[in-house]
Image (cartoon, rainbow, N blue to C red):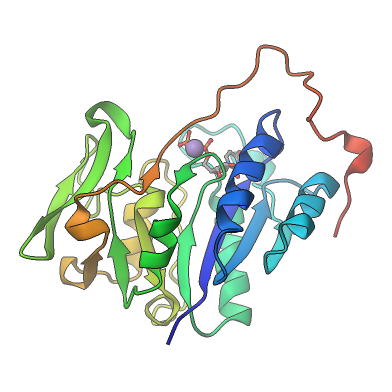
Length: 240
Ligand code: UDP
Ligand code: MN
């Protein structure tokens, strides 16, 4: 069969948000098997984002799930954890079949990646460009099997991957009903994949045995003035 890819995008209000979401939406609009789950890190959803999702014509769900105030400026807590967790809860409650992919709003994606991700049986992995001082984070593949990770940040991680470097079949996800994303910064991916009981053997290398880059960890520079025209005004906020 040809499964749906559930693209989970944590997002938050900032001057570059609409620019980033516009680029990502118009990437996903090239595909007809995407369900886009966008979760705002805030108390409410925002009308401009809701309108962008409507315009995209993509099947989607837009929710708000704020980081609790006590964690908001804690350097030990990863970014976008609580909204990604809310997406996992929603998937568990509403969807049976498909493939999960965490797509941050500011990365750059080749649409071929999403096509390849559809084949994920358990956990697929692939290189991510522009990560730390190696300029890449990639699984190391020998005879079509993953044997390790080329990543500048090893730090006792079993899975030295970026959030954009893996996808999970929902069936595999649902084998561990309590598995979630841990809070500790830099260990979100490793902690999640460990919580799923993943072994190296479960990993399916994509992107031609991880020899191609199909996603880049780009970061949108904040403009000099925060008072840019496309910053959604508060008066337009809604709770959809
Ligand atoms: N994010 C979020 N809340 C925050 C900061 C970030 O939901 O307080 C989202 C952000 O929109 C992105 C993802 O989490 O989709 C990763 O954040 P960011 O791109 O800032 O991290 P980096 O790329 O610098 O590691
Ligand atoms: Mn980013």
